[in-house]
Amino acid sequence: MIKKSNIWFVCIGESVPFDNNFSSLHRCGQLAHQFSLDGYNISWFTSKFDHFNKSFLDVEDHTQLSKNFEIFYLLANSYKKNISFSRFINHYSLAREFKKKIKSLSKPDIIYASFPTIELAYQAVKFGKVNNIPVVVDFRDLWPDIFLTAFPKILHPFAMIALLPWYIQRRYIFKNATSIIAISDGFLKFAQENSNKRKTSYDRVFHKSYISNLNITKAKSKIFKAIYFGAISRNKTNLRSVIEVFNNLGDQYELIICGDGDDLEYYKAISSKNIIFKGFIEKNDLETIVAQCRVGIVPLKSRLDFTKAIPNKAIEYLSYGVPILTSLSGDSQNFIENNKVGLFYTNQSELKNHILKLESDHDLLDQLSNNASKVFLDKFDFRVNFDGIKNHFISLIDKN
Image (cartoon, rainbow, N blue to C red; front, side, top):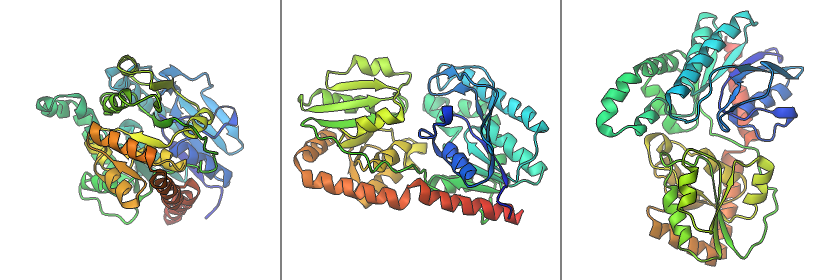
């Protein structure tokens, strides 16, 4: 194949590289950047609205990062809450803008489309099907099913009717994508079961992966510090239980919370001085904080989408060699226990006992930390996983 193949990346809701700073990129951005370094011509379609900060980016509609890496910023309305009518309108508008934008562009050799969002993935698969271009759909979240969690169970049938257009589009995406790559076995099986009996040999599991942070120097402290970073949300987490445990521990224990969300003020109101809120943290600052922490906490609720995968934050903790404490059952619990990289708890009493045990048993903590580092390098290191994804893309382009 010709090395200078053209690849479109269709993905929103991720950090973008300002001033050629590629250190804070996530899955799609990392892949796009690495493909560009390997000589491929990359076009990344993303949103001009920053999902994390809920504000518009101060950028041009088109940015040329390098000779072979460009970003197209699609414009749509803003929204304040993650689950809101305004956000649904935003996603619909972005897909419409994407459809208009690509009419005037040269066709790529392959398209990578993140799922979600459904609307953008749908337009990417339709375009690929019409123009005989292979489309790789990266299945990363169980939309639209997760939105049912915002309603009481008695209202789920009515909510499913309202979400019917998304269910129809999802079935089309899963049926017509050239390849589905998923973040876990559970996700891939779900996609295949919801694709009208999809039969292909081009589907793969590629775990979420990160650049190794194992080289950071751990800071020594008499205070036992734990960290949680991620969404500050009562809908997604059992963070209140974690806060209540640390509220009742002594001054030698501290919980550091990094991130933002709709329920930030609620959690601040129920927290003692043992709980430190840092807000949204850049990567360099996060490294300094994680270096002080002995464990990372994953207090996600055991809902359908979370139980079928290993969440981002758990893998990020592993990238620092930090053991995990989690209440999340399913794939995460099995993974953590089988690989001995952390401890699982079901209630506040168990969480408190785990913390006290790890604070006093340094050998156990060191063992979990060493296992975390080894497992990260084996399963989640970006440089290792990228080679697999690159070879997969090459095989699809050559086949086409």
